[in-house]
Length: 177
Image (cartoon, rainbow, N blue to C red; front, side, top):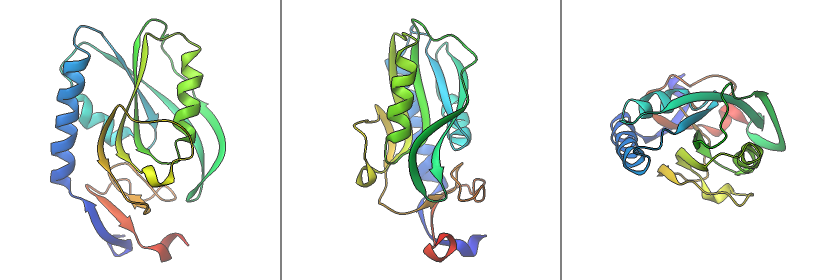
């Protein structure tokens, strides 16, 4: 598996430092607001778990499973396979996503959740890949801007593999081509 990684893009130590910093920022911005963190499965699970350890405010969390990918590219068609369990009306929603890539999924998800009349919707993403953006959506909180490369690790996968890597690596093109 490690032979499939071309290079380490973000180290474990860099991840820990930036996620802790984001947690402090969110704590400051949402103090006394009781937000609900909405994790977008599966890729967010490690990032969200670590982020929540650095958020020091009253809050709740829920998860959605949303997909617009087939293999390595976005299909453009968003499918919700698990919806929220909690009511978000009047709540401050923080969508937690592993990577903001084309933006198609997050744009759809934000519009989908807006009809439920939350007080606000913010996006917190581990990585932002603006070179691939197709939809007009931006992260309110982002740990890293990354180049247009296929990244895995720290929850991100290729074909359900590599999620357990403790760093973000660039996958060798011959692995997915």
